Structures are given as structure tokens and as C-alpha cells.
Length: 238
Image (tube, rainbow, N blue to C red; front, side, top):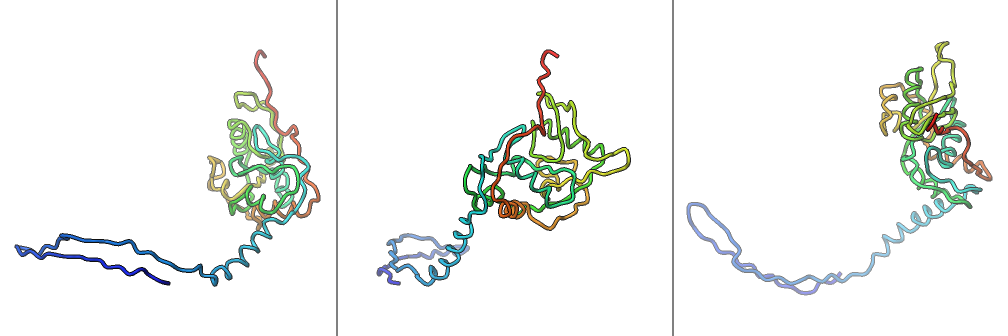
């Protein structure tokens, strides 16, 4: 590494009084030019890791027959994620949030990198048990938000966000509890899901992203469409 010669002149004057004071009376400066070659050793260390990550993220893990897109009251990307998650746990329903699914997946080959873009967070899958009142609170939450990704239940609501009809996945009258599969973020009250706060969480032992990747690797083709799991009924004039 070569440095250009430089000189800095700095003059200080000392004045005496009750206390010593120092002040800069003049100075000159010159820009230092640093000339050096790129350290190839560092690049030799980094390159294998960089190439390895790129190779892993570009791995094609399935084929997508239709565009998986975000939207409300339901979406193909939301149906895809919540439906597959139920295959990894003994739960009655699955609920996620639209904001947690960060992107869409276009028709065609799907790479592992696209799943990381869809779910960049380290969220784990957990199960929470709800009673009848808490289940109703969950339904109201979905309706008031105009829909959120879910699987394992059906909802009919009006345009004002009021529940008209819904399915009952368990028999609450017999003391049964509803097993809800969700992410640990939402289970801790994330995205205003307050009905989960304070509830005991049963960890499944798999991250949400890993469940999606595993499902894709075991599926030759993904084919997801909008269905009737949630309906908005027009009640104007009725």
C-alpha cells in the first residue's frame, strides 16, 4: 500500500491566564490518496460461499401451474400456504396474515429463493387451543379485516364485515377445543391477534418457510385456485 507524501502544519498558541487554554491559530491540510490493489485473498474466501448460496437459491423445487397472488377476501398465495401447513400438524384450522406473505409467485418454475422472498422471516409453526368465544373473536377479526389467509373453515360475511354464517370445526358444546395452527409471531399477538395472547403454544418443530419448501419439493406441480372458503354476500336492499 503506497501513500502520497503529505505534511500537516499545526500551530498552537499557549496563553496564560487563570486557566490554560489551547486554540488552533492556523492549519493546512492535504488530501491523502490511498493506492492499493484488491485483496484477492478475501475474494478467494468469499467466492465459494457466494456461489454456493446462489446455487442453492436458484434450485428449482416445483412448477407452478397458475399465478399465486396476494389479495382479499382470499388469495391463491394465502390458500396455498395455509392449506399446505395443515399437512404438517394435527390441527383443525390454519390462520396466517396477508402482510406476512411478502410477495407473489408467478406461473412457471419455482425456486427456493422465491420461497425465501415469500417468507423471509424465521417464523415457527405452533398450535394454540381456543374455546368457543375465542373462536368467534377470531372469525370477527377475519371479517373486520375483509379476509385473511385461512384453511379448514368456511365463512359467509357481508360487506360491512359482519359474519352471516360460519362452519364449526369442533363441537364446543361437548367441551372440545379448537386447534389453531399459526406462526409464533401471530401466536404472540402480532398483527393485532390479541385473542392468542397468553395462550400456551405447542411447537410443531418446523419453520413456516421450511414447511413451504418441503411441500414444494414433494409436489411436481402446484395448482391453486380461489374457492368458496370465504364469501361476501351483498345484503343491500334485503
